[in-house]
Length: 343
Ligand code: ZN
Image 1 (tube, helix red, strand yellow):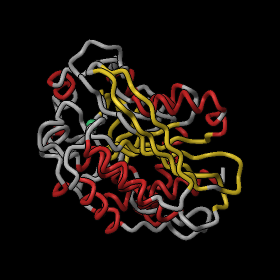
Image 2: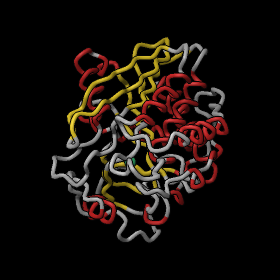
Image 3: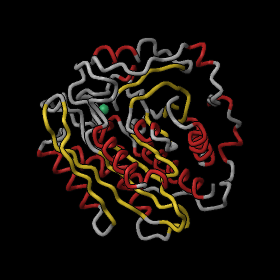
Image 4: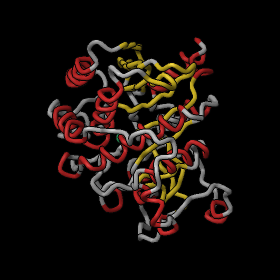
């Protein structure tokens, strides 16, 4: 993930968390936050955990479909296998290994590769997006995405991005397992492992998000040109979703009705306490789709260790993660897809 600006927080003390990573890492500060007052006046309903009636946790699935299944042990195994490749920045041999690893797990699926060369502050670098398509009976597409590259500036360290890069990439592999070989009575689901999400040179003075999101911006442009975007009903991003202490944010720069639907899915599964206690502005892969008018949401937990201390450090390792968190996010995404099918 690229940047985060908090605008509302829950009762836990996190006094300097947002200013700290942005300033310390000199990220481009692109979006200026509205004041806390105006955020408080936001019409967006952010439901604090404590306001949710206990009964909601066991609310029946509104469409009487069986609850989604998600093999969290297998997803966790994928995380462990991905991080064994080591740092996976774009243009590296390790990156090629994770690319091949993802493609090997999609053997037999309909896969589209999107390869190009990105002009970055460090020169030209290769970018490879991977899309797996699972067709449905309804006209329209639901996109679920995750970046799979790891932080570029840390490429010569032991940084392995267990949460930031591996967790959501593994999550999508397991979602593919759940979609494969089943007849979808609903929209087509396209899973996108996008590349070059991370900033290449965060300390350069470039316009907001122009030195990041290389892969997903390329896809958004391409799909705008070929008409795919018009058919895209929703774009759901997963990023940093493996933290054992799972607190998914509710970004302000997302589509409110889609976030409401995600919250409804979480509530129907009894997982709502992990969702939406905090909101802010997030610079992440959903932005290019949101800007092009596609309903978009970003499932991200930007509270990774106290004060987000593990983010973009060599402390981002598997021992901080939990298969339960993968299960929660994976199941909620699958349930959200079910709810979208019925809209
Ligand atoms: Zn990152």
